[in-house]
Image 1 (spheres, rainbow, N blue to C red):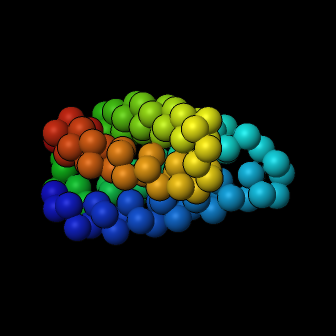
Image 2 (image 1 turned 90 degrees about the vertical axis):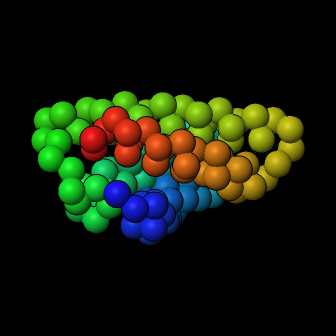
Image 3 (image 1 turned 90 degrees about the horizontal axis):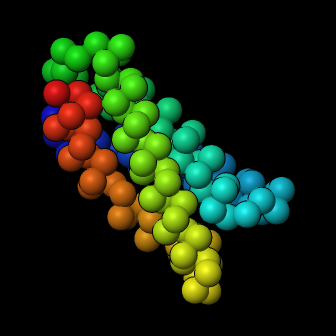
Length: 120
């Protein structure tokens, strides 16, 4: 249960998140907070698959137990993420700057919860 694979998987999930965010905002003029929430959900799917396979390999927790827990953590992270993007946008930050702050804020918390609860 190392932080390094978690960060690598997280970077991949974050790339998927940010790609969808930019597509929705730039291509479809979607509100940044909503686009960020949808991107976070996509990223959560990528993160679950990657973390299950590469980060929490030693976990004996079944998908039946781990997946709902992971999704609950991901939903809380998506809400926190969207709130930070909304607040950042409201105070005049570019949505990508606000997203950078949001990503930083939720990564380590998500690791701790997933390590101690989701995959334990």
